[in-house]
Length: 342
Image (cartoon, rainbow, N blue to C red; front, side, top):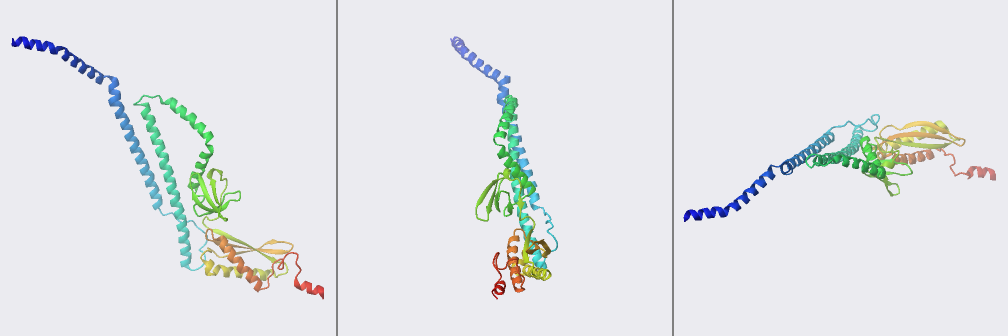
């Protein structure tokens, strides 16, 4: 009786066992199939390895850029030669040189940091675009040739449509590499725009002019730059003198007044070298013109020019050196009127 029951139970369970065995065999066959091995093992591992390599390459390249930038920031760059030894006590000369060195060092550090950021952005774009294309090509089996061709066509279209933007960025990069100007410099970018640089980016240069107007100038539109604040400046002074004066005496008076003005404590810290009396630069029908050149600190040429011109005018009056029209054009000299009346 017991054997009959066992046989019956075995016969009843046989269909279920066959179904389970078939399911196990199906799963095993699917797992051993090439498709399952590719999408569940090979593809994830390949994608993971590609992403890991991209992360490591991105980190390593950023690290190298930071190291290179930090090395340049910490390096001691010699100061550009400004001229001769300068004027005044040695302490004042050293202070002026230190001030110029500090300004140039700030500009250099700002330029290096900006270029490092540009380099890291470029590295990120190149690495991750390459990683995405590699994942699409190898693990996923996507034909990337049409994508690359389409990207080329789109790039050309964007290049034509946004060529001014690309031009601005390229001009900004070369401007930083060549150190054409920096924040705080007084520059002339043409079309009557002259002022102090307040901000620089890869696309725009922001300039504040003498009237307080803030100009936003695209870097790609700057065809020429005149920098009034690079290394040193020249205060150029033209002094007109009437022909009735003794030219030698006028020369001596103007030269002495210039030297005294440059030795004054107000201007001495701004003057880098002895003033140069160039002599008579113009010989007109009604006057002579004496030219004076004074080498000054960057951006201080206008202050020196204003102060020296005032001193020269006072000295000329004290020594009876007259300008071409002391009483104004078309106005008769008082002595001439008295002679006419007599």
